[in-house]
Image (cartoon, rainbow, N blue to C red; front, side):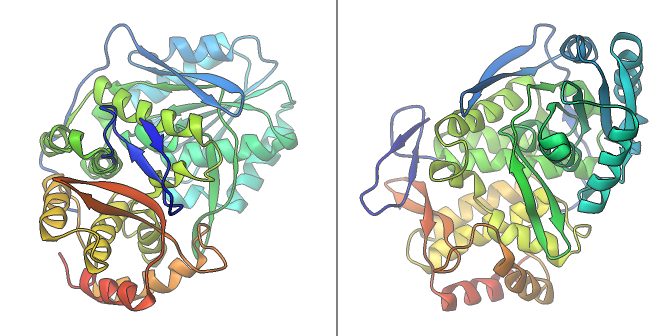
Length: 396
C-alpha cells in the first residue's frame, strides 16, 4: 500500500496496484485450515522497533524460543483458551522450557479488559517476582492481547511482551500494531498505550476450536481490509462467505495493517483508515454493555453505517452501499441493530477517543470510477449522522 497526498487534508490509501483505490447470526459451518509447515514471517516496523509476525505451525516451539533467556515469564490468558489443546500445550511448554513464574487468568472477553483486572494482574506479577527483564505473554483473543499488552506497557513503566492471538480477529487486527488498551464502562479502549510486542505468533490451528460466532466476528475485520482495497473485495468476500480461513488470508490482512502502521505508528494520519466502521461500532459495543454484540459484529454494523452515511453525504451511491452490505451479509454479520440501541450508540460515540474539538471526524468511502477510495478525517453534519442512526436502527 502507498499513501497519497490530498490537498484537502483528507487521507487516501492506495492499493498495491498503484491506483487510488483502497481501501449476526451463528454460522452453520466453519472451514478454518491448518497453517503451513513453514510459517509465513512478516517484519513489522514501528517507531524504530522491528518485530516478526509469524503465521503457521508456530506453537508451542516458537513461543518457548522467544521466551528463553528471560529471568521470568508471565502468561496472561483466559480459562476458555487455557482449556483448549493448544492452550494446554503452550502453558506446559513454557513450564518446561522457560521460567514461567505466573499464569494470570482473566475473565473471558471484554470483561477482562478493565483497569481493575489489570491492577489485579500487576499485583500478581509483582508477587511472582517479575522484573524489567521479564516477559509477558498474551495468549488469547483480542481482549486478552489488548489487556496483556497494556499490562506490559504500564508494569514497571514497560516490559516486553509477546502476542499469541488465538482468534481470527486478533490475528488480523488486534495483536498487530502495538495498540494496547482497556475499556471504561462507557467507552471502548479509552485507556491505553502504544506498546509494540517483541513478536506476534499466530497459529491458525487454534481457529479449529473457535465457536462459530467468534470466527464470524473475525470476518468483520477481514472484510474491512477488502473495503479499504476494493480491488481485493471479491476475493476477500468470497473467503468470508465460505469461512475459508487459512494462513495466507491471515498473512494478507496482517501485512496490510503492518504496512500502514510502519508509515503512521501513532495514528496521526493514514492509520486512521484502519478505524473504518469503528466509530459507530465502538458505540454499538458500549450500547450493548460490551457483551450483546461481539467486536466484529459491531464493526460490521459500523461499516454499514459508514457506507450509508457516505451515501447520505453524496460521497457514494446505492451500488456501493449494496456491494458493501452484500459482503457483510454474506459473512453472516449484522447490518443494523434495534432502534433504541442505535440511539444509545449515538450518545456513547461522544466519548470516542478519536473525537476532536470540532467534533467527530469519520472514515468514509468516496466513489472513484467503478470503485471507491476511503478517506479519513471527514466531517459530517449532525443532521446526517442522526438520520443515518435512524436508518441503521431499522436495518436487519
